[in-house]
Image 1 (cartoon, rainbow, N blue to C red):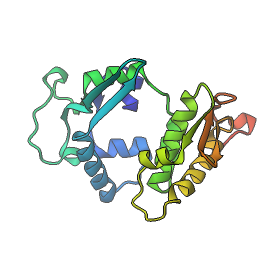
Image 2 (image 1 turned 120 degrees about the vertical axis):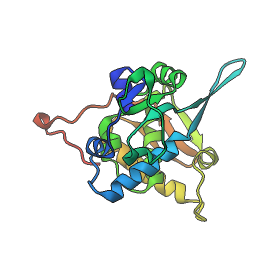
Image 3 (image 1 turned 135 degrees about the vertical axis):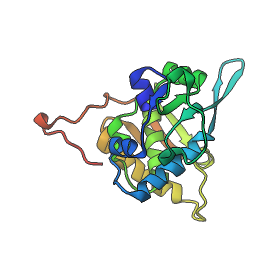
Image 4 (image 1 turned 90 degrees about the vertical axis):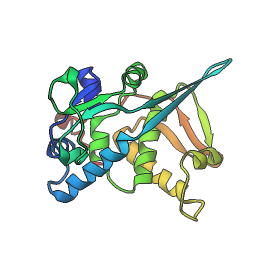
Length: 212
């Protein structure tokens, strides 16, 4: 999706698992290639529902992520797939056009470094991305109740306070990347407000290099 947005095209060329690994900074090897193949398999069947609530009605759109794909077996497995006539014989993925247009219209810029460098437990990573979006989109002060957070991020853990532990770690990570982000834990839930300043890129000349 990142490459599609940057190239302003729903077609994403993709010639090998190794190409994806290099761009994402993953270790080379059969295990990594196996994981890439498994991830693509999940995304290939993914359907996204987007709900937008207005003053009088709620609009709901449902999109598959991938419309068509023509990929080497190192990514897609032996699927006996047909090539994309409109793309010749080039390997790649064609995103669902209405979804691509919707994302372009409502695009939230996610710092590349955030999703490249972020490590740690998956629940914490999910919360960091979500917190970034909430801080980016916030126009005023609001409280997100703990119950609402638990509903949005269901836990298989028997510890009901686990989400608060994950949230504290996520806030710490976000604050490293974006010190001006206005977010903190509150007895009622999560307090979020409009950031006091935009996010600044790292700059070695100004001694501004942050490690996640």
